[in-house]
Image (cartoon, rainbow, N blue to C red; front, side, top):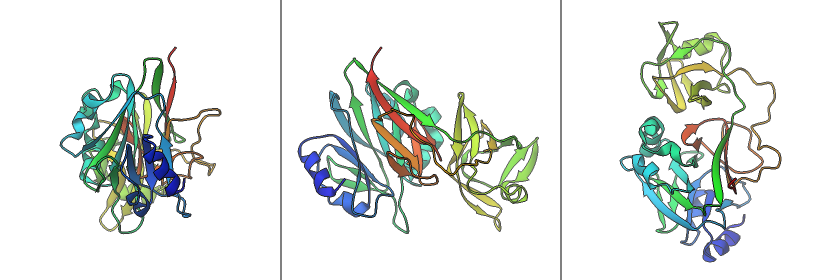
Length: 298
């Protein structure tokens, strides 16, 4: 959507979620919107999600790494939250690594994205109400819905665990040198090289019955270190994803019109939605498609 058209919607009071180039976001007027940097069309357009017209209230709040654990308590009883976090910031680490300690997080739908940026610039998020721009806080839109509507968060994951070795990490975090395979310590970078595992195959763990991916950000063979786009957890067991034969990325189910959608910069762009360093559906995912639906209760 062209910035002038976005500005008109903001002026009309529409609550929006906006992603795209930092300069274009910075030029928008104040209003009821949140935003974050993300890869966008190079023709000067922004990616805009209009929050449901049926929403009875929208509250926009900022969170730092100390206050993010309270985001679950701030969520509406019947509604959902859209969260934008600057990539590889302190809030990103705090949320991704501490998500299982957020009280009430899984009680109500929470979706969003990890803001991305190309080149040397840091990813940013925008609070449209105050005009604040930051690479050090997260911003959320809490959306209240009438009782007749039910929001649901969904994840389309094109990957499944492969049949290779099971990996266990000694500590949670965004990087690792060693893991254990069959109880024996193994250098992860060397393990990947020896088995021809590339950056296109994420680690996959079972998280409460849902496969959760951790994308490989970089491999430093000299240091024997592997960096991730999301944290690995010491209490989970991982396998590298099975190779995929098709190049197409995850897609929305036929006939679905999402209230929000987000894909990953490491995957082919989805037909709808924005792209980020990670996708949020309660926890941080990689190389998936996250979307939110709002349907009549029944």
